[in-house]
Image (cartoon, rainbow, N blue to C red):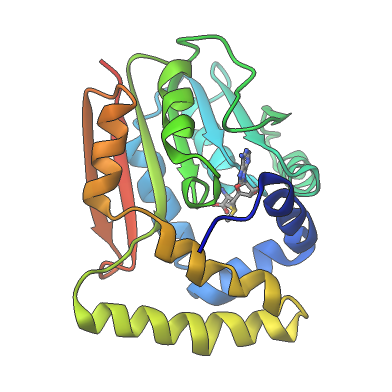
Length: 234
Ligand SMILES: C[S@@+](CC[C@H](N)C(=O)[O-])C[C@H]1O[C@@H](n2cnc3c(N)ncnc32)[C@H](O)[C@@H]1O
């Protein structure tokens, strides 16, 4: 099945923006917070760093990064869906002490940042949604400084039959009906095909190296249901 065009993906995320956080919490039983903390830790942010959260959505990872880089650091959250960025901005404005995060409307395939700009980066559930994964990885590589690390969290495509069956059941029995209650059945039915198209961990490693990363490792987490691809620029 071919990927929908970027305009359709952007429209989809703008539509689900009002319920995105609630659904994320419900569907993962709050576990996505733990997986996001792991991704932030693996991107190795330090006080004073310039950190990047690409495909930031409503900004969970950007907020976690902001706490790590502290008042001497800076965080940029970039996404192409303005409705989600608006929620990200509102949420970070409500934090105390206030978090200084630059919210940037931008396409992951054509980032408006100079080469070698960021000290570390995260992507949460974004790589699966971009229309050109190799290009997104090349852009990420370009904007990272030499030595910088990024952690890319997403669903994992399990390979053992039990996990495959569990994930299929979870998507069909939990995700789609929960979304249906919010009249977003069509929008969430998109997850399963997007996962079928998403490269396996080994392929993600190959793509990351082809994009220029010196080190790339894929770690299955959450009983193999999720995965984190960590990459380092030479
Ligand atoms: C499933 S959401 C994840 C949001 C957030 N990172 C999280 O973990 O909750 C995927 C995000 O990727 C964004 N996205 C998809 N393709 C993009 C692109 N080409 N450029 C920028 N953002 C994109 C969507 O707008 C959406 O906010």
